[in-house]
Structures are given as C-alpha cells and as structure tokens.
Length: 225
Image (cartoon, rainbow, N blue to C red; front, side, top):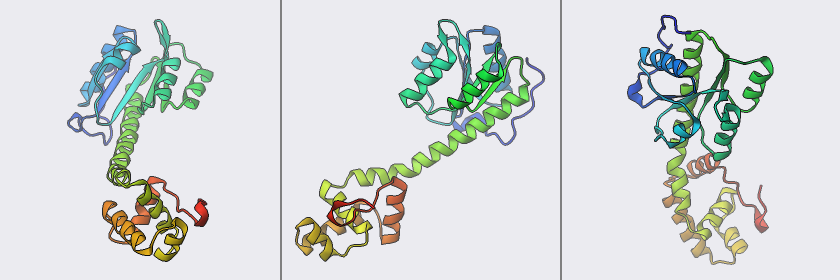
C-alpha cells in the first residue's frame, strides 16, 4: 500500500491542531497510515476499535476519521451512523478490503467524504484527507463566527427577544408597543437593550446577525414571516 509519499497539496502543518484519526483492526494498515500521514507533517492517532477512538480526547482543531468498513465486532458503517446520530461532526473517509460499488455508494449516501478499496494509492488518500481537513476547517470557522452573536442573543430576556423579532420586521416603537401591550417608552428601552446586547450599532448589522442565527422577523399578531 505504501509507496514513497508525496506532499499533501496546500495542506497546513500539524501545528494548526489538525489530527487524522484511523480506526482499523489491522495493525499493518494502522502502521502504514501512521507513517504516511506523519511523512507529510500531519498528526495521526490510530485505534484498533471504535470504542478506543471514542475514549480518546479529540482535538478542537480540524480533523478527519479514516474508518475501515469491516471491524471486529462492529460494522464501520454502523459506527459511522452512530457518530452521525450523536451529533459528532467529523469528515469520514471509508476504506475496505472487501469493497464494491454498492458499498461505496451507501457510504457516500450516509455522509462519507470518500471511499477507497484496499489497496489504494497513497496520493489519493492524502488528497482525500486534505479535502476533509479543509472542509472541517471551514465548518469550525463558521461555528466560531456564530459563537459571538449566538451568545449575545442568548443574553436577551424573553421580552427583549420578542421586541427584537418585531424590530426585525420593521415595525416602529409605537406599533410594537401596541402589539405587546406595552408603553412606547418601555419598548424604546427594550429596543436599546437589544441593540446593546447584540453589539449592533445599526439596523443592517442587527439584521445580518439575525440572518446568521436563523432568527425570523415577527409579524403583527405574532405571525412569523
């Protein structure tokens, strides 16, 4: 399986916290993938079973799981479904010594990034890992960008969230007051609190953050747009 490895195209060094996890009950495959990934400067952790992988502390940086389809005591496909159901978001590259087209199609339908039958070309695996790390890096960056606005929104009181919904719909303070049975001055105070807590200096900025969070404007009578 292991030929002389070439460097992974545009892939960052392991200093960025990237980790490749390998789950395969074949010690020879684990060793070969360990050498291959380390040869291009990537950190790699190998495991004989899914349980060992789950017990291991996972990196907060971009990562990828290379998973064998056939494992002792547990199907790799079934384990992948468990990962999906648990909410763990990690790109998965399947490999198998018994692969066929149908198995590959099923793996891709289940959300796998790629599928390789053994023996595979080293560069093909490196390229797949590069794509996986890039995708996971983009996901982490998107989540980080949402962290601030999400925390800000959670700091709003239930009434402030309601006021924000009406503000997003374009209603004036007087109209919002009528909808919520509040005084116009009270609405003005809540509106100011919303802008302050959401760290928004303008309506366009508030609208942009609401769109990032998937918050819908609240129309009169409580109807959602």
